[in-house]
Image (cartoon, rainbow, N blue to C red; front, side, top):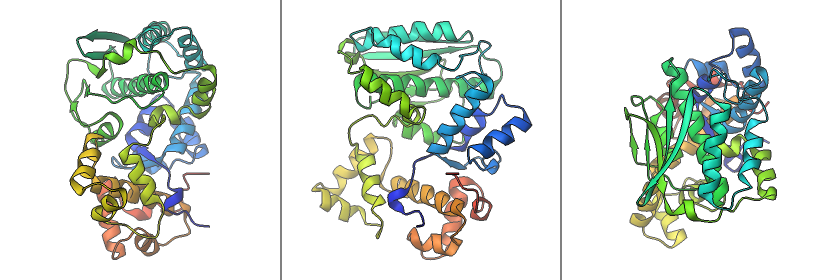
Length: 338
């Protein structure tokens, strides 16, 4: 059976693939990408996307190649097994704040060039990264990787997705900045003095929800679970994606709002609060489906256009170039789920 909307996986920005393989030599890079089912064109197309499961495989494969769960970015290796060991150490604390401070100490043992700092004042807590990696691309991806690790840990400890009140980045706005909005929320600042995540300080005093059982689940699904932070709860954006995955139609915002018993304004407002919107959510699912269907290799561009609700292949081609910077033909037959 061909992939359908109900089977569409999440995707992640190709910029993260480029960061993950940064320390691999050319031969090893080609071998690892092929083994993980990642099209090497992703490295040449700024807007390209990859299946989240394929990125998860890539994360683990690079760690095994380098014996380093931090992609060879730091002058000290974070050897394979370090993240699991750190997670187990967090269970000895009762509060979220105590566990996060333990994580801060753990990363200080594993890394030399990037330091995590947890502070809190009034109503805001802040995780700040002090990064002295020299190469700009490596420094940026080190911050990106550590941010998703920390936010993933925070969500696991809280037992839910923790909203980020503001995210600051110590570099200019990159081409994949929209990915940060999806991952961390709408309040973003670039060219900041430090890379930071801010969240509600009251969470630090709360009892954490982590246990040996949830740890097994968390580690079993890592790194995909860490990167996507799909911990508990049905958010509005996820609910909308699930609704669209049913296939068979591409409903209007009015139809979905009526189906859910809310006004169009309320639906738009709640999506906006989560860093997305009606049309971006539609575009995201169409993009992910297009990549999956094209990679499958059994569908013409015309057939994919029809399945995604476009009037013709030309409309899909324009949209695909806008999403990835490349024509859809280059992605046909490069299966993401090999």
